[in-house]
Length: 118
Image 1: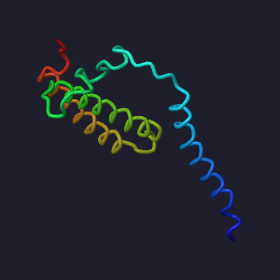
Image 2: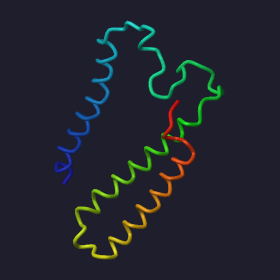
Image 3: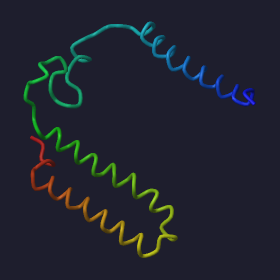
């Protein structure tokens, strides 16, 4: 009975080996030439090597909330669209409520000025 699990064990060992060896090879073989361009602030807009308690702009969080709103919309609408005909009017109403709540969140961010970047 245990011989049925041997392929699973081999697959796990190979997966673990690749998961450990590939990043190590990348670290060991990659060129290490830091420059100011690579070390500059990338997405969040503040220096990466600064004090952890330094204040920064709240608009970063507002953009993150906006991303979550649209990410959730896509994550729920794709499966809903695949079974749309079997759900009937109940599915349509449920998606209407969901999109209504997302619209309220979007309007809130719009009123707070999250879409206006200076």
